[in-house]
Amino acid sequence: MTTDKRLIVAAANLLDAGGEEAVTLRAVGHAAGVSHNAPYKHFANRSALLAAVATVSFSDLAEAMAAIRGSPRTPLEKLTAILDLFIDYSREHPARYRLLFNNPETAAAGGELKIKALETFDHFRSIVQECQQAGGLPDAPSETLASLIFATAHGLLAIESNGQLHPEKGLSSVKASMEILLALLTPAKM
Amino acid sequence: MTTDKRLIVAAANLLDAGGEEAVTLRAVGHAAGVSHNAPYKHFANRSALLAAVATVSFSDLAEAMAAIRGSPRTPLEKLTAILDLFIDYSREHPARYRLLFNNPETAAAGGELKIKALETFDHFRSIVQECQQAGGLPDAPSETLASLIFATAHGLLAIESNGQLHPEKGLSSVKASMEILLALLTPAKM
DNA sequence: ACCTGAACACCGTTCAAGT
DNA sequence: ACCTGAACACCGTTCAAGT
Image (cartoon, rainbow over all chains, first blue to last red; front, side, top):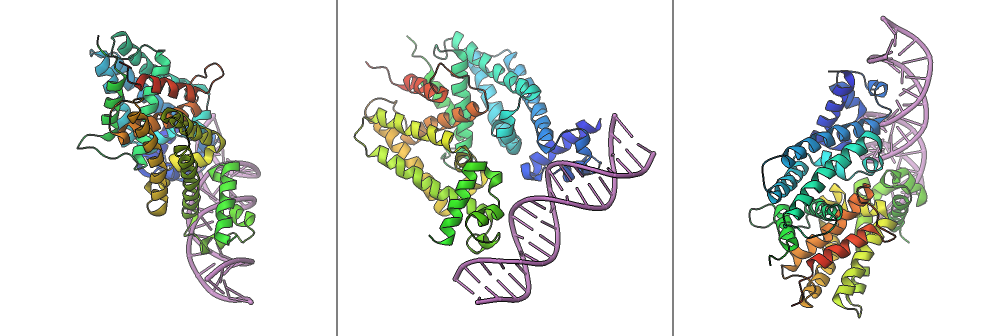
């Protein structure tokens, strides 16, 4: 594996294991078997290395979403699956989730990172559109509705981690709340 | 003004002006007219100082929400007003907003900070409940519904700042999307 | 009780130099 | 082309000392 890939992997592992503050260039270099400033030969600075981690992470997410999108399930099952994927990802990789969806620098990025992020969102939007065509979601621009649903999941995860979402019997509060939202949004069958 | 208050004000100003990274104890001390480690005589460490900033910020927010809650408006007008307050706050004080609603340390805090945060949320929940009683929102536990609406606003602000929310003609996208959500949630008049 | 200045460990970044 | 080690500026934190 080339040094730049090893640096990205090392940074991602440190991020998952110890949060963003644990991703020091010294630790990354050491984990990749190079000196503490070898990263500068591959990335402009620490932010650029984190952006590279975000880019590959978005790629992985987009790939998993594409698999769900192409699977033989009903649109509503796909929507539930993709929401679960997203929610599980945030629980299993909280610091990386923060880097992807809660980081001003990631947000301000352009280039490949932005493209991968938009790709990820488009898989989600497409599944929402399938649900609309199947009559399971109301008739609004799919992008607007997808933003709303995605934003709600994202926001619920945030307030859950803020301890402001009271747990409900057994079930994940976020998943339960998303089911309530989808139920409320489902057009009345005539 | 006592030194501890001056330190909190200085930290809040630095936060608003330059983001969290600008809140160094050296800069805070200098702005408050004391040495770079005088803060340690009033706060356990940098995190504790930021927690104090969060606490007074939540207090201010709760006060503004209480004013809306007690104003002579219809429940739906109050809900719109409180959502606008929240959205405007995030735009005018982005770094402070992040500290309040997007910070793992704030989330993990207890004590007065937690109390003030819950107080803020309860004003919101109460107005949602008023809307439900007026028939403008569906019949679900007010806490659950309030969490959903709050989470959606929070999430929309996040994806807007992530550049994933396309602007709509003139209006704030977040405010427009929230109106769509409320319209979709409004029970059909029979 | 409240504050200061020196000191320590750590970090991002730069630079001159090595192969 | 790729890497290393020393160095610099900056930061959070601690400590001994001052009033």
